[in-house]
Length: 220
Image (cartoon, rainbow, N blue to C red; front, top):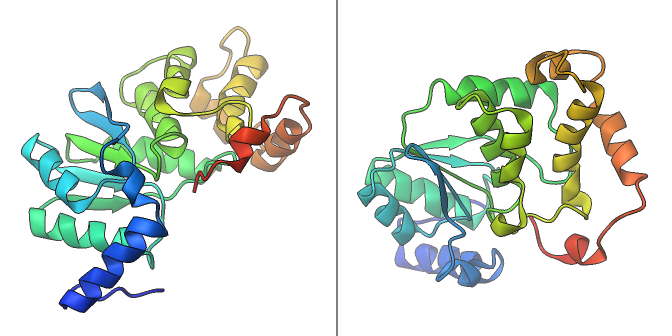
């Protein structure tokens, strides 16, 4: 279903029912997987509209949607809620099972310098794409080194390293392997020919240690 109509009661019911079941939003009513990374940056799973109201009350000014999904019920409800609450909604699409390309990394770095903080960043579960974006935030905005940034990719955030989503960890691992003495900054490495997202994904897929459970869980 696309183009959810929120101006009528019937349209709102259709959007909420789709959101509740197709987007598994019932799982997020009592569990937000929310973690403050700093006093200006909080990561979470997909928020309900009433949760956005609560975040607004806690000072959040900007919401970053990492999911895309512009024809989905979750995006229609989020867009409507942000408009009503006076929150700025930024769409910054990432994937959880591919290495980010150069444009995405550069765009994330630039975005952190232009946001109206405090911000809430979310994907669906708050586990993978939110982990990647949080790691980039720690590195680019806070100046943390890559090992420090990688702490955002952790089981405590429900991120699983041994399935297809582990490619996000592998990107940073490859940087540390290619630059054992810190010869290039992370930005310089990403901008160089050494950074090939397709080759990195192929190399990661060839590794023997994988988790079937991690791949079977819904991570959209």
